Image (cartoon, rainbow, N blue to C red; front, side):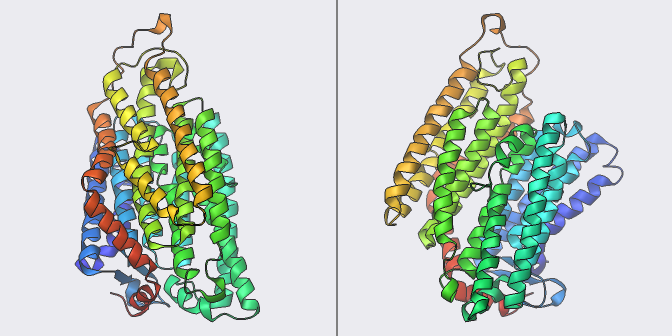
Length: 505
């Protein structure tokens, strides 16, 4: 069964979603919860096993139905994709455990939808062709539409309509871009496109450039890159925090697509189209960091602040995509893992704070004290220090790596001031948030309410996410070696083409 391992992170969530819709899981909440957690745990284990297998044996190319690339559908499990698959599966497990304390009862089909979303995200990371990237985008988006309406009210409905409308437009543009590229190249297999794009001449070059830039528009929308980021703050802030925590990985799918397409297809070996998106990516990334930082400072509640932190992280990641070198990609992978886990944890911490502060919720206003100030305060401080980039947590390592990588770039004079000022803005905003949430109290509401303490499973899910930050430092040597190996493999375009087109399982 090892030869089929690359397909398991897609098949297991699909199987889990189907099982959870059928009796007895579909009718019994306790059975549904146990089955959901068990399947999420199994998927995380399989994802870890796949990562180990790829690390030991190299890229796994799985040809579905035995039809080889470029004519058949293939899954490509390389060091980059399996890392992100493991990240997604682990985040899905944490969210599933957290939701079992009541959030899953606030709407129908929560657990199946979570697994279907994980299916879509994992598929997007593993697919070897652009059309199936579109298909998996649609799978994860359909699941996200329903999850966004979980425990819905009029505010969620308004945000959901905006979110759905923009993504439907994005999907239409995606199909147009794919049609143009297929008409020019005769293929949508990523490896085959990378092989053929350098051979284009005449008008075909301009058509391929149009298709490639339309893809940039789509990925910018999916990843919330300026100016297509306006949907994200309200959408993430209005969603249930447990859903927003899961959504922390969704913007990274857009960033991953940029990394894959503009490194492999339109990278060093693309001839006249080499690095065609780099000028756009760099300018938009810096602008996104600036706008996201302003949003963080202006936020009036912890959920909106965290949503804007996601925007800042997207800008940082896209800036690294624009650099188009191995060190930048390695730093990108490290920072992507760090930022996804920490932002997800902050959404969950915001949920517990909101429940324990009563009507004030997580707004930055004096109110009732939280029932567990030391526990939640510690979780908040760890997450805040990691986000800002203070030692000894992973944010510090990631920030130093990013600054060191950009130092040799001609863009350093622009990026360094922007990035450091943004970090200072984050420090100020999070310091204000912590002071208000945990210290400032109204006199009549000074005593916390009894009976609203967090369940141990909720705390366990948050700790599981936060503990990854110090672990990324403790095992920093091994982790850094893996990131560099993954980046090197991604930038070895000729080797990747030969592996994928040379045959699959």
